[in-house]
Length: 186
Image (cartoon, rainbow, N blue to C red; front, side, top):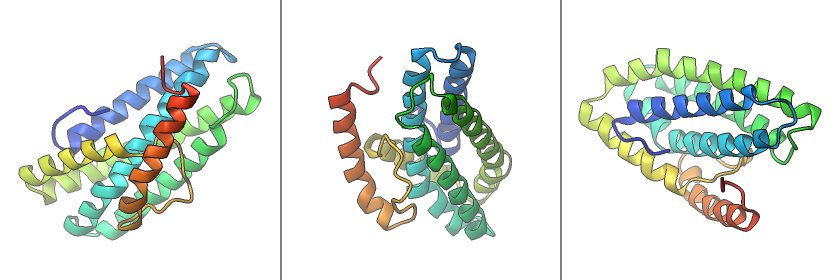
C-alpha cells in the first residue's frame, strides 16, 4: 500500500486493494494453500491501514468534523472487531474449518466498515478540511503505513499518544518475524 493522493484517495485505494484480496481468497477452493498466503497479505494490509487511520485520520476527524468524537469512537470500535477476527485467523491453516468462517466474517466486517467510511465519514472530512489538510493527511498516512505493524495486536493502544509511541516498535518486531518466517514473500 502507498498509492498517493490525498487521505481519502489513499484510503479508498487501500479499500479496493483489500476487497480484491478478499475476492481472490473467496474464489479459490476451500483448503487451497494460496488462501493462507492471501489471508496473511490481507492481514498485513488491514493492520497497516488501521494503524495509520488510528494515528492520523481519527484524530483529524475529532478535531475538524462536527460530532467527530462519536464518529471516531465508532470507527475504532469497528477496528477492534476486525483486529480480533484477524487474531483468530492468524496461524489457522486454510483447511481448518474455522478458516472459512473467519474469512466470511472478516469480509462482512470490512465491507460494513468501508461502506461507513466512504459514504459518511470521508464526505464529512472532505467538507471540513482544506485540500492542503487532506493532502498532508495523505502523506502522514503513507508514512505511518511504512512503519506500522503487520500483525494484529488487539490489546495495543489505538489512540494517541500510546499508538504513536508503540506502533513503530511493534512494526519493527513484526517485520523481523515476517522476514524470519518468510511470511509476506510471494
